[in-house]
Image 1: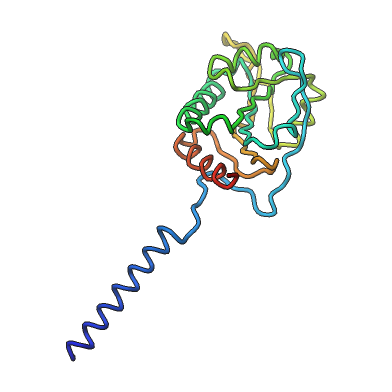
Image 2 (image 1 turned 135 degrees about the horizontal axis):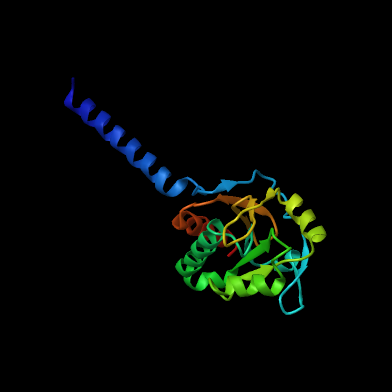
Length: 203
């Protein structure tokens, strides 16, 4: 084979490889690691609950901030404290951008969780987190709107009865859209990765 033709062929292959690598590294959009909602993004169902100080919290009033919404309860023996600790780690890794993110913890156990108890509980993890509770009637609608499964199981442990519940964190963007869902034990770095992508969209 003619050396000139061979050289041109090799050069073309190298060029194609460089272009392909550039497209992968710089041209392709970054992918989220959590479970994403399909476009057009659904609006997050709004809700209103009382805070520990008697003031009103309205989810719709959070527009302009990215919200990480998690449902759980203060007597939870494992899932809830683990998740809240991981969300606190995520906030630390975000640095200054953490001020653009609000963690909201809503009770699935209104019989034991008052708004005061919820806020006191989340303060152990991060004083910027918001803990909310309410009447079972008010919360039932919220659980339904967010597809939260909840089941009370009688127990004999020090925690009393336990509440089996959906254990996922829902990311709501600054426009109030449902964007990403993180399952229990999603690595903190994956949550931070997706938060950074969302926050970059909103700059």
